[in-house]
Length: 292
Image (tube, rainbow, N blue to C red; front, side, top):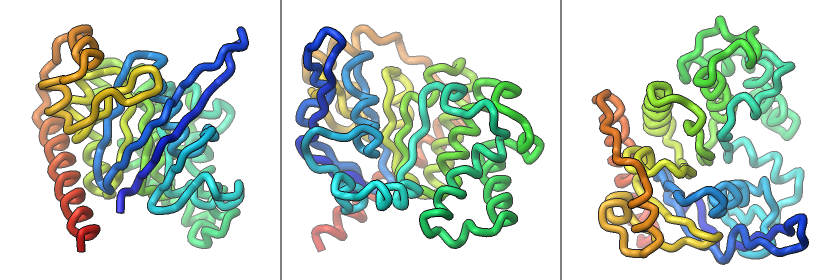
């Protein structure tokens, strides 16, 4: 069973001038467990809106959205909040997504407190929550020395690591990555991507990776969907779509992209290869299970 399965999803917005904007216009897709799906397109193509629709951070106008076989559009608000621990998101702007008044410990602990309120008994102990916060911060490369700091005292890369830790602390199965490295410089970007690849392997995560950076998608994603004006114009494996684009829009997008910058860090390439191998194995296992 795919971890994500959406059919004919639509979302419109009204502009200040009274016009209707079709942000997502009849999108259908499925994502297998352990896979990394990249969604690329120019700014305003509907990528981020689709990511938020998948997690029901926006309400779809119509269509079906199944996460792990569950129709999330039919869930009550309480049921949805109870399930959110399994489906998380990392936002584009790390500082804007963190409460500046809270310490890093409070920021990362907050999802555990919310989960506890909705029946997660394993998070009731304050000591257990602190243990989870500390161990998750260590997973993303931050020591316990960061617990009492605030976001303003951190660099951009450290802020994004906190955002990733907050996302992972409830042990989700699905993570939407909404341009998580676009505001970071190249060196920090490579280290964050390497960390995300390693976390995917160690935790068995499924990623939806939203980006306009074709080179990053080329190295990080196993499959890609090209989005234009709220619709998918081309989908396939990353190699198929980016090495031999068939649609005119994809060809123009590739022509406008900067030449690829080779990754000199071999561990980045190895982690990416491990993710793709793991994704392929999981997708194959899922296909066999369905056919059986």
